[in-house]
Length: 115
Image (tube, rainbow, N blue to C red; front, side, top):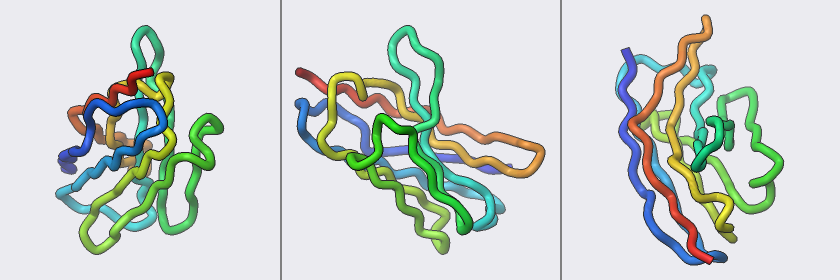
């Protein structure tokens, strides 16, 4: 079983920055993708960024503004969000994906970007 605890959301003005953190407990391999998804008001949940030892990917709308990183020893993933835009407003969910696939989710953290 994997448990995820997120932190770092909040309210920021457009153009500002936030850093999200997600600490995972349980058995996680570096080959398991860890990352972030988000769900904006009235929208479906979407991939933001994921990272593993073999791959890192970003959704197009955040490329060049967001950076995902991971401390494999601490089972912690980070999302540095720069040049935030109002359309980045969403609940951000931490995710771990294991083969199956089996997905584990955090409780979500609210990010609000004011214009």
